Image 1 (cartoon, rainbow, N blue to C red):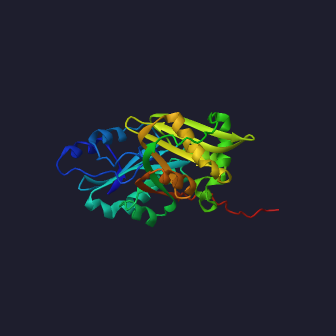
Image 2 (image 1 turned 135 degrees about the horizontal axis):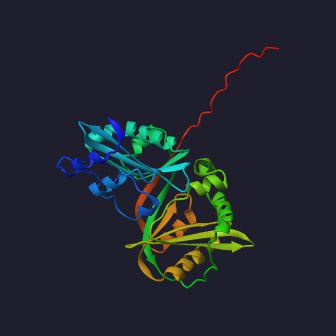
Image 3 (image 1 turned 120 degrees about the vertical axis):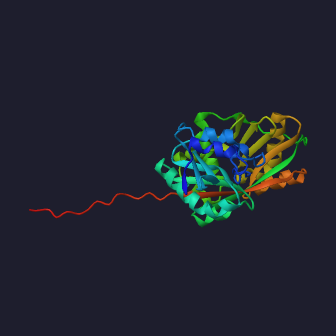
Length: 303
């Protein structure tokens, strides 16, 4: 049986035959952490009716939870993501139907697109692709030491709300054409899909002739620092300067993570040449939700 999670389901998660699984997916805010086990306290929180933009859907057999998905919206109700997925061995066969049910719940909440970030070879990847998710791009999480190389730095400015349209234009220039429709074809769609974060976040931009040519995002977490970035292809020759700028903001650190997508070759090569290596890899998948217009019936008109 597939249904939403209830508060009465929580006591069974204290028993020996409870759902005992690592998280099969990740999110932008948890990308530098390892998949954590499902905890009863989290289950209890997820049964609460608030916030309304969150849904917990489970697969049950004889009232025992075998698989669970948690969905939540991003910046707008039109974009949701599968933020947690847990399953035992018996529940793997139910993941397809569970994802379909979860997508229906998200659609009722206004979703037009659903995202999922899964580690490579995750058991959630197959069910997702079989139920309409498409691979958008791959992310490598590189880990290394942020230190000075002695090159010049760029004059970055802090991102302001008025810069978001320019940042969207940079996004359009960087992202391959084939995945733009899935991520966002206009400013409104792109803003809705921006990911949620935890910790302290700093965002910077590099302006040339009133056009944003690079973006740097630093997320200070309790146990790690995660950097994300874009640089315009026409300015890829300034990548070393860009990395030097990140060092001057963050300072010397030996354990830093940098998110690099598979189309960001210049940044990947620059970090690799400095001894950075891949700590983890993820597939980002997107499922569009079809919206059907109500059909108006044609009635004869008497003249």
